[in-house]
Image: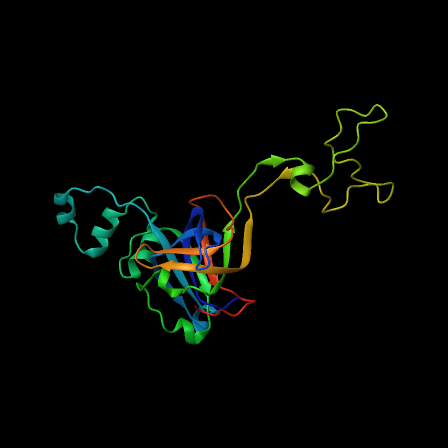
Amino acid sequence: MNLNMGILGSKIGMTQVFDTSGEAVPVTAIEAGPCTVLQVRAKDKDGYVAIQLGYDDKPAKNVPDEEMKRAQGAPARYRLKYGRTPQPELGHFFKANETPPKYFVKEIRLSAEEAAKFQPGQELKADVFAAGEYVDVVGTSKGRGFTGVIKRHNFTMSGKSHGAHEFTRHAGSVGCRKPQRTRPGQRMAGHYGAGRVTVQNLKVFAVMPEQNVILVRGAVPGPNGGYVVLRRALKRKSKPA
């Protein structure tokens, strides 16, 4: 299990930059943060240790000033301002220093010593990483709908000889005489993509804390604008530049 520090963000897109030797490097730009610590999980209370992060604020309602003044207390004003969010979620976000409700909420498993450094309402930005470190990026791959076996499982097309036609992209036999049924796990056509994908050991090329942008070398799963989770690499030690 990866117990290294992480942060939430969204994929901006791919581009290329030039290193010190003048070589073009393909990178993915990721907007990492700002993230708000919503909750700190404890071993004695929750059974595990983690911090819950929220990213991407939900918009507030345009409430008239007179109505806001009539509201009694901070919780009532908070409910008026963010009334589109369900009440149980509102209470959870309100406890985290009245932070605005978030679209993307995830928990980052940490060690007890690391989790003790955080408090609800604390803000994390892209400077938790440094250039030269290696990260694991978790995202949701692009959904491609219902696809055939050639695109989904890299099957080879059948030949067109001996009068065969109209079946060049079919899967072929999906069973046998015994056990006279289709075995579980048989590769067939079906829904392809839109799944959790982790790309490991991507090197951080640069960090721009003013814009909360991190450039990582290589490709990141998902479409532009898709949510991602960045964690310090589990299998490779980082060597900051």
